[in-house]
Every structure is written in C-alpha cells, then in structure tokens.
Length: 162
Image (cartoon, rainbow, N blue to C red):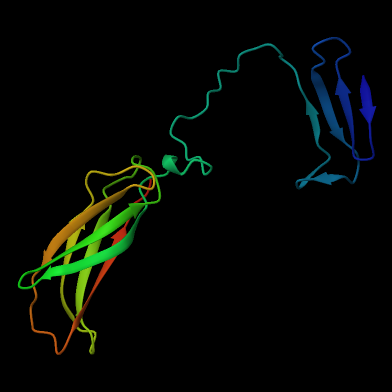
C-alpha cells in the first residue's frame, strides 16, 4: 500500500502485521539534513542480536551518574596547630562509575593578603548514593601565622567517567 504526502511516499505491507517497507523522500525535501533518502526495509521477524548497553547514563535518573560531590559547608572549629578541617559534602550523582575517587582540597589563606598558608587533601570514601551526604577531613600544617584572620576553602574534584 502506498501512502503519499507532500514530503514523502511511504509503502506499507497490505497484510498483517503491516510492516513498513519503504520511505522515499520526494525531490527537494530535506528532513534532518537528509535529502533524496530512499529507505528500504526487509528481513522482518529476525533477531538482529542488538542489545542495549548496560553501562549508560540516564539523565532522567541521576543515580546513574558517577559521583558528583559538592561542598555544603566547611567546619574549622578544630583548627589550631595543626589545623584540622572538615567538609560536609552532598553527592548530586550516583555511587559508581567514576574512573577514580573524588577528592576535596582544603586551602588555608590569610584573610587580608590572600597568601596561602597551607593545604591538605582528603579522599571521599566510601561513595554515597544520590543526594546522600558524607564528611571528609584532613589536617593543614600551618606554615606561618596569619596577619589577622584566615579563610579556609574546600574544593571538590570529581574525576567522572573514563
């Protein structure tokens, strides 16, 4: 059976299950950057052995993402010599699939000059699931006394998929 329109001719089998046999775009018609397309379909009722991949990211389900940690807050209440700091993290992704562990880098800087007085890095382990929280901590070896006050920042690094 032939069905015609202004853009294409479509051919469908006349007996059930009415397989699509052919789609032929008419002259000067462009659909999704295709012009002059003439698709012929055959070999129905055959297994093509095509399977869906198992390791995929489904953006409608963020738990399929690798871990994506973001810093919620930084705690400096135990900062002395050495300066023990911690950060509360929230995972906006899933718990598996990253090529390596996520890390958090803490930096202690003088409030006025911005001079970095010390850093440390903590590894996030174990990973938590989507929207879960976890805490990491490390000690900054303060190399010199700040002029007045100091600022501690924490930056999460997420390696993602390979």
